[in-house]
Length: 255
Image (cartoon, rainbow, N blue to C red; front, side, top):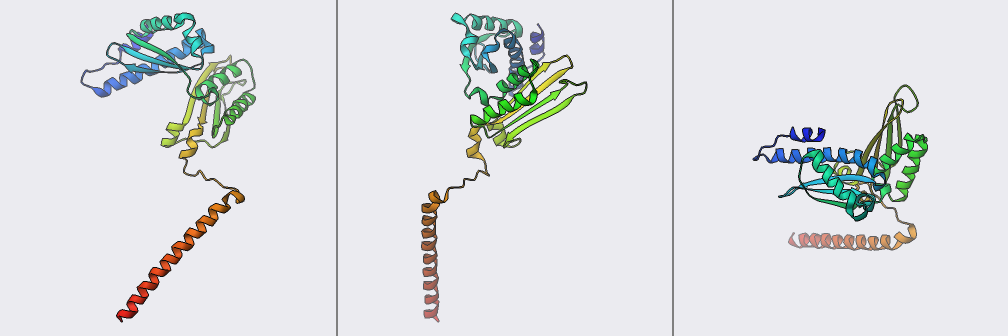
């Protein structure tokens, strides 16, 4: 009922494209939060990552991306059909189709999965520093250029504390950061208070788009390249000298 009330507050005029887009974005946000909470309790092994919402002529099309689609679908699609009914009841919308797809990137490079795994480990009493560096090492072995993990909240003290663990190159701004940085956030409750975990992983695909990406070749490998470059420069230099000589000779004849 709460979700129905939230979605009913979004007023959309038929002629307003901006309002329809805002409603779709709001629906996507609410659905992701609802699914994250629901599936973490009912199917934690499914490894829910995110859900995309698309508006169709006969209803909404929902695409759920998770680590283990078979766990979420269950035998003969029992859990999938029940999930469709629960979404209809919770949001008051017509679901035309629900697809469950496999996670495209490795789990070690998905910031949301890593953030939730770190949150569960710390919640069970693991050392935050040890857990953070374990997942940083896993991501770097899979080809990540950089990993940053931030843990903030009341862990074992009365006062809130901030912890930051990072390795490699971290991108924060620009178009490259929007396209090639995986971001995730998870929070959990301890007796001392709420703790949040934020993860940023720079994906391997960003290496080809970095301006400061410089490759240094081994002298034996670069020997042929340098020789070819020297011959090209020498040929261009001789060509320029010949043109200058011809120009000087022509000016001497005219005088």
